Amino acid sequence: FFFFNDTATTEIYTEQIVGSVRCVQETGYQRRVHGESNTYLKMADTQQQRAFQKQEPVNLNTKYLLKSKTSKGTRYYRNIGLGFRTPQEAINGTYIDHKCPFTGNVSIRGRILKGVAISTKMHRTIIIRRDYLHYVKKYNRYEKRHRNIPVHLSPCFKVKEGDIVTVGQCRPLSKTVRFNVLKVQPQELVGNIRKLFIPF
Image (cartoon, rainbow, N blue to C red; front, side, top):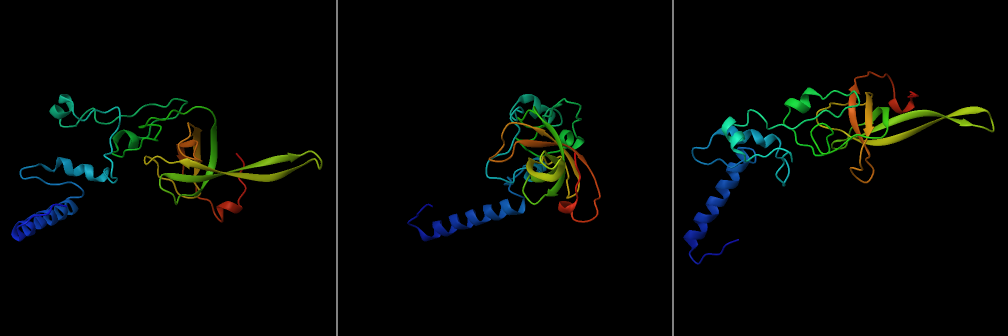
């Protein structure tokens, strides 16, 4: 805050602040300057957080990018291997996710698992359920068991409850998340998903 001795100067400065805030809200988090093009307004979709979102391997200040007007080389994606294809949304999309295995800094190694998505309420994280049989030696029988695994979901995938999800192990992404979604198979399951037994 700035304090002025003159009341008129304070009112003018206050009006300028309110006007700039109103301009930011109308243009979607981007401040419009006189004579500025609308190319910067397209970044409002990805800039939804306080910190500036960008892909680390992409340099936004090179002369080549300014010369080509960000038509080439602005998107970083890679092939994770293991027979999994890179989704088109990861190649042509505009999202920024540092924990995405296709566009971020996460390598897939270790176990490859399958499960049923039972909860998609969290932000970029889902819960998958894996049913399996456990052998009890005393009774020579098998009992049903299950595990719920939290998995990071990249924005390049659209998952709803009941879908079959293939996940791969990666480094710890949070306190409980150690897996990343690699493939989604749309599946229409009838009834309560938690009551069904689908061994993998």
